[in-house]
Image (tube, rainbow, N blue to C red):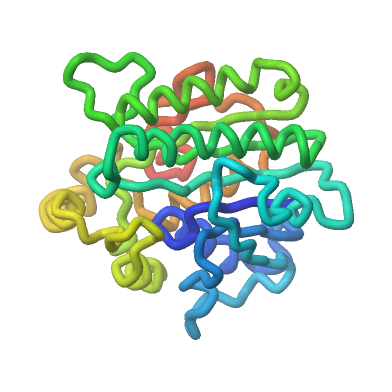
Length: 287
């Protein structure tokens, strides 16, 4: 299987990549993923350059594809590079590319990055790469809603709309022949709760994830880390806590799975949209 990853300089994408690199080479999941293609505006991915990066997974080949226009996947021959020499029977995508609404210059720019980019990717990968099955995992977030009200913030409206349009795309010809969508909604993403996530925490505080500001350096993020994450770590509100190791494992398992709807409490949209409590149940931390 070919896994395509975006957002590999942000916290969620770094955690996903860390998990894949940490898999024992003989593990069933590692053996499913013969190659990972990271699509990135940056030619270098901090985790891959780090001397202490995980090295257990010697089976999966990782390649970085530098790309700057996420509305045009034909540009720079990206689709041809993704297709490679052999036809992929099954492709998994984890779309972790995103930006805080506070770091965009307008609602239009936020909508373009958050909604247009993943929709265009799903269409292009489904049609041009032509796998028999395309599992597309879109990283949304708690607070997203397909039914926004007057008080719903911008991110909730846009992410909710994106979730809906991706699911609709799954039922639209010609994409319905191979596209399987999962929208996942992490809560308080936390790389500081586990010792083996130290490198993820370090890297995503040190780089800007391609957004022009450090991924954890906005006022809101700093406030969440100081005030909310300690509460989440205490176990008071597990349903809103997203430790990165568990979160990444569940996302990868969804991506490489059979693509069928998930039957778990906390799932919405017929098992296609998974709230954080559903992700934690899949991870085994919440009953």
